[in-house]
Image 1 (tube, helix red, strand yellow):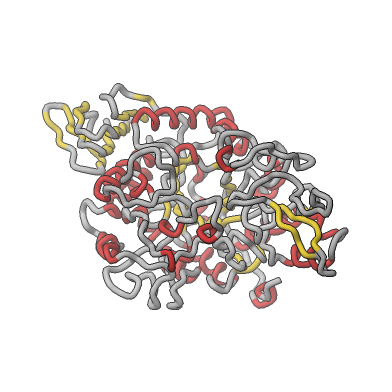
Image 2 (cartoon, one colour):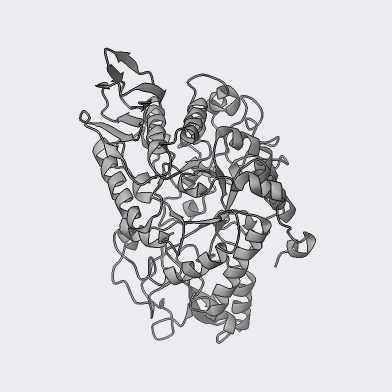
Length: 564
C-alpha cells in the first residue's frame, strides 16, 4: 500500500463555519449544477505538463464565480494509469501525479470555504491488478482466500485453455485472462469486464463490502460531499456466471439486462451504503453511473433508500431534434417521479465527444465522432442546447471547458494519443483523448495558462481565443452566457428543482415549455421561427428580435422568458 497513509496526518473535520457555508441550501442536490473536473487536464501547478490537485485548488474561485454548486473530481487515486486512473491500486491514497493526501485535504477545505461541494469518483466494480489484494492472490496461488475476493475460475477444455464463459470485455476481446501460477504453469482465469489490468471484485465475498464501507468513511471523514459511483450497474454478476450465448456483446449494451450488468443484487449494496451516508451531516450524496436498458431501470438506483442521482445517458445521446428531445424529457421525468428522485441532464463528459462537435455533425453518428463538422453550427447548437438543459427540472452536469465552447480535438496525431483503449485494437474506438485535451486559461503561454511546462496533450492554436482570458467579461461570449444562465437559475424560483414541465404549442422543430412564470423556447429546426413573445427576455443563446408581440427566434437558438 502507499506510504501516504503514514505520511499524511489523520484527516480532521472541516470547520463549523465552512460547513455552515455549504449546508445552507437544503436538498441542494435536487437542482444542483455539478461541474466535472478531469484533474489531469484542468490546471497544472508544478509545470510537469499534467494537471494536479493543487492546480484544481488554485482555480476554485473561477468555479465559484461561474456559479456551479459542486465539483466532481475524476479519479486521482494511486494507480498505474492503465485506464486513466479507473484502475485503482490504493483507494486511500493520491497518485503522486496529482499530489498527496495533504493536497486533497486542502482542496476540500478551500472548496468548503468558497461554498462549493466536492464529489469524488469511487470505482467499486474492479481494482487495479497492482492492488495489494490482487498481487497477493496471484502470489498465493490456487485456493488462496484472496482469490475469492475476485472472480478466479478454472478454464474450460482438456487443459483449461479456454475461458470459463463467453463474456466479452467492454474494451474488446474475452473478459477473462489466464494467469501463470507461482510454479510457472498456466493456471486459473480471472474476470475483467474492462482491461486485463482491472480485475473485477467478487461482491459476494463479505471482505469486499467491508472494505468499501471503510473507504466511504475514510473520504467522508476527509469532508467530501459525495461520491460518483463508476460502473454502478456492474458490481453483481448473475449466479454461476452463465454464458451469454452471443458475440458482439457490446452491441447489446443498453438494450438488454446482461448477466454481468444491472443485476438486481446491486441494490442491496447501495441500501447499505445509504445508511452510512445518512450518518453524516451536510446532505452528502451518491451519483450513479448506471448504464441500463431503460430510464425506468435507471430509476431503480435512485429509490428513496438508495442513491440520490443517476446519470441520464439517454438524454446525452439524443440528437438536436425537438421531437426526440421532448420524448426523452417526458420519459425521464415520468420515470423519476414515482421514486421522488430528481432528473439529471448532461451533454458532455470525459468519455464522449464534446457536444459542440457532436452537434456540428449529422445526427446518428453516435457519441464518439472523428470529424470536426461545421464548427460554427456546432457552437451555435451547443449554446442553445445548454440553455435548454439548464431550464429543465432537476440537476445538470457541466464538463470542464464546455463553458468555453470548446470543440473536440479530432486531429490529434496518432503518436500523441494516450487513451488506453486506443492501443487495444478492439472494443472501444479509443478516441477519448479529443475531449480530454487540457483547457486554455490564457491567450498565450506554452499551454495557454494550463501550466508552465506544456501539456500532456497538444492544444490547438485556435484555443487561444477560446480561453478564459479571451472570453472573460466579453458580452455574448460562451463563458458569459454560462455565467448569466447559472446566475439566473439560482435567482429564478421556477428554475431548477421540480418534476414537470408544461409543454406549449410551438412550430415544427421548436420546443417550448412553461414552468411557473418562466418559459423556455428552443428552435432546433434549422430555420428561423416566429413565436409568441411570452414576456421579458431573460437570456438567449443568440439574437432574438421582438416585433408586435412576436419574437423571431433564429435557427439553433434558445431563449428564456419571464412572464413576471
